Amino acid sequence: MTSNSDLLTIQLNIGSRIFPITIKRKDEEIYREASKLINDKLQKYISTFPDQEKEDYVTMVALDIAISLIKEKNFDDQLQEVVSELNKHL
Image 1 (cartoon, rainbow, N blue to C red):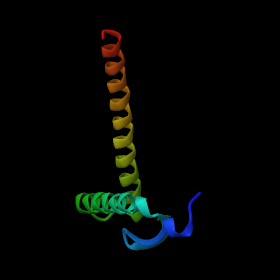
Image 2: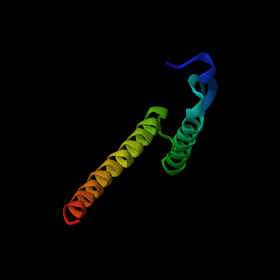
Image 3: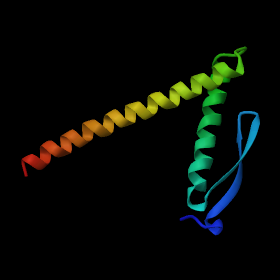
């Protein structure tokens, strides 16, 4: 169970909006890093594709991050197969 002392309310600035969010203290760095990642990708797409709708930029960022997660999962699955094969021969 999480006590109030384990919680922290932070302000995340994503795009042009500020989101107050209550999180576990130990997760603060993860949330701030995620916010930075989103903002960096937003800036990349805004610079690369000027004059798009805000929704288009958000969609591009979401797709970019989703593809990265899927690639990482596929890599993890392949790595697990290699480890299993190696363990069979030990």
